[in-house]
Image (cartoon, rainbow, N blue to C red; front, side, top):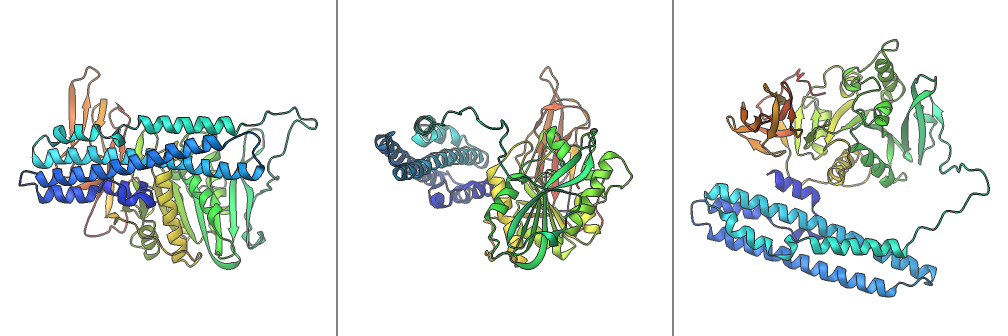
Length: 506
């Protein structure tokens, strides 16, 4: 189920019918589990032939296009002709990058379905069909990679960056207009129909200079709700930043009803240090709503709420997994609140985990103020993942559409999220080398082996078993393990939703 969901996220829409039909192959496999499996082999061969044919056609087309563009280029081209050439070459580079993503997805699909076929049939199907896949051109991406390298080299050669000349004036050049610093966010003071940018000071550093957070305010042409989006509350959780940039870049202010307030980086000191915590290591998502006369992170948290987030009517707090761990695309929300339950479903995640928003979290602080708030977990730390970010952006647009802030129609996901009544982490008892077996967003059964710890000499020390049926929300990928390290985050599908739930996930 998980790979189907992942494939839905990464599929290039115009090529959707050419991808390996993993769902169909799985249905054929289970329908023929009790017979010889000949039907599965026939269908599998048909699918990989389809994939290979599309790959070869695209590769041939890209090679012809590259040859043509190389022949067309000359240094004395008219400016208009050069712009047309650049546009065509940009499309070629995009086609080659799509082709690389396409082959990776299809090769991964082949590997996963053959592994499943071995398990279901009790035979080594992969020994027969695996070499068949390996012999096809789409499973040998070296040619595509070489073509992409050649195209990029041609682009760099033809579109050379002009040499820098020594400045005749001041040595410092202002690239962007000066952005004002304020100590209070006055939404009414920003012009309607425009995107405004300000720095909001929340504290002072050891030099007495303001510690400022960037805030983007997009006010629509007409009045409406105020939706706030915060990212990087943990300084190394970055996937929310491009989501905000894309959202603000795409919004049509002439049709926007209401105001978007976006904070691309909440934890500025942690962001500077590429670390999860505040400057002193404190977790800002454990000290909300802060104190006006408290510790350094408490003051920062207090001013964040009183100067920025108190203006929100709806709040989406964007996170990722912590360092050394990976997450599915999932949402934490209070599903007993109709507003946040609706927001969670509109977000189109893989998994929704019920959590009432305990004290200490930014989401909980917003909920205490009557602001409908959810936490969106978008993949992994310290990196940008465009596929997760793309789906998160679609979910945010769905919420804006449901609030009638934008005219866009709501986008329905190709898969239904798993709704968990609660979740919890499973921890190690022994130290050593940790291996976590299940993949993200896959199901495990009670008693199934989920992890093993080996000694540094390679001996098995301990195995860990799923305590009950559940879905993998997140997991540890760091093999260096001490006693008490996290193994995986298990979501449980229950019949009822607890009214109060504080399981450590904020």
